[in-house]
Image 1 (tube, rainbow, N blue to C red):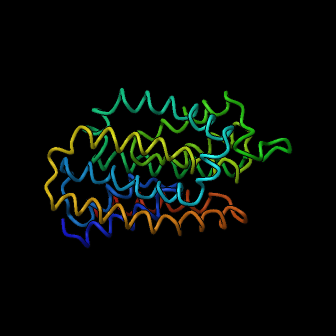
Image 2: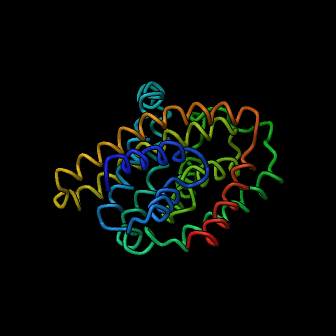
Length: 256
């Protein structure tokens, strides 16, 4: 891997992290497209640069996350199921799921169908929760359970969290913002766990590649967050469902 490859991965991560299209899935497919093998370093790289994108949330929402205690408490509760499931399944996820193109494409395809069907029949209730700080702890925990499905690459952490929140009666803008905030402890834990177990194998060159991807994903994600907030003010997620299906089909027939 060269520095421009690391920057490319950072751009892909920054664009896709908060959209309901699976950033991990896109990173795996990007590696496949340019002919990279899923080495242990690349798997760690794909996990670590996601935290770069997540730091953009801290930059934009630090007041909400750290100064509103009711929001922070609900983020912590929602993080619990993901933390437990992620820790228990860490070895399986890294050894079996990451790098498995069939799993990624299947999850992208089925997730796209689910998004389209969901948006066709979902109607926001008049009493839907309008603020992340107004979530009940039960709702917060359930949203965390939905997020845990994203241990499967291609599912999309943001899609699982957002759809879960909408099903539980949360306004679209509120659950999107809560999804942003929940990403912070989730990806901090995932990155820390992986780096703790693998940092000793990184060379100086690999550290530079990690930093390149990390910084690039941070900068691009700042723009992606602002785009998504503007987008959901006028649109639902049907277009993302169509995109997922098309990407999975094209990749399956023309790349694999």
